Length: 392
Ligand code: CMC
Image 1 (cartoon, protein in one colour):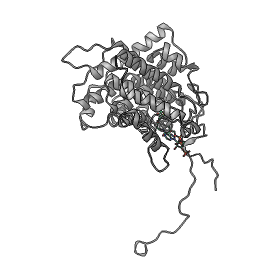
Image 2 (cartoon, protein in one colour):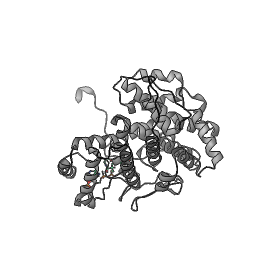
Image 3 (cartoon, rainbow, N blue to C red):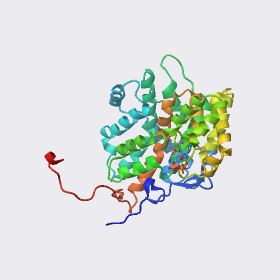
Image 4 (cartoon, rainbow, N blue to C red):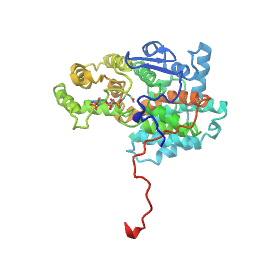
């Protein structure tokens, strides 16, 4: 029989070469194309990071202007697509809507589904980055029973997303620059993370030659799970359930109990065995945003900080090297902005789209790329003869 390396969860298998993102899990280091995430979070902005991830270098002023105008040109979605939203129940989870609507994009943008044509690939990449906030915002508007708000291209990427979510026709909506900068930073921190589950899903789906819209829909489906992107929603719900700092020990005890499936959401990571550098920036950002909004005595933030403090001193978490991850503090900021928890994972999805697309583009042009086809260790019945139904 064939002998294969048995590696459930791909803990030690590199399935591709990549030049996009580097993680040193022991040091807690994350680089996009060589640039540290902390520097980007402070000095860059989301669309510049998109350019960097997609094309490998920071843009010149002219290249950035051109890129921004190409993205803004594509922010609207085909008018017919709104009927997809209207077909869903109002209480549908926005991630369920996104899986469906993004998958359906290939039915609307035929001229960017030929993966062998570099021009079509480029248009597909720009379309995905441009339209994802529009789709996420429409999913939100639909869930709250408000009219869809069209994109406003005079606003920056993050500001436009807030506008599409929170503007209503009845009154003027002015995007708060504090919130728009915080949203932009959340997007940057989520933009790429090498071969995580959803990115690997996108690579695997598109390795068969599937079109980019279908492949990204597969990535969105994977991201939804609570062990991955769904953790931001689960984390805030957990912090709310804990409610007050005096209840923290009870939840810490549950997380340590082998017979209890409960885990501390927003804690632990497959690769980071140290602080997730994104969590550090996110924590600082949560402090800043809540401070600037004048809600620094926010109970959820208090619970989060105390939970982090207690867990980081606890032998269980210390010995297993479990630290807060990116999802631990992001929900607190998103909640302060006015988002319901069901929108947290869609925001992760729209931010990660550039990473998925960059990894997809890299894969398509890699001469070593093959269809993804893992093998297995067969543990089922040995060969046996078919039994007639009367004799079973
Ligand atoms: N709370 C309590 N115990 C935990 C936790 C946690 N959050 N995470 C891991 N452990 C324990 C786990 O029980 C196991 O113990 P033992 O060795 O005694 O069986 C050990 O730590 C190793 O865990 P694992 O599940 O084998 O590790 P993994 O690399 O397969 O899983 C993870 C990584 C992120 C799925 C996991 O840490 C987890 O479920 N965390 C909570 C969900 C979460 O916050 N996910 C977001 C990840 S970062 C953003 C993203 O990727 O989207």
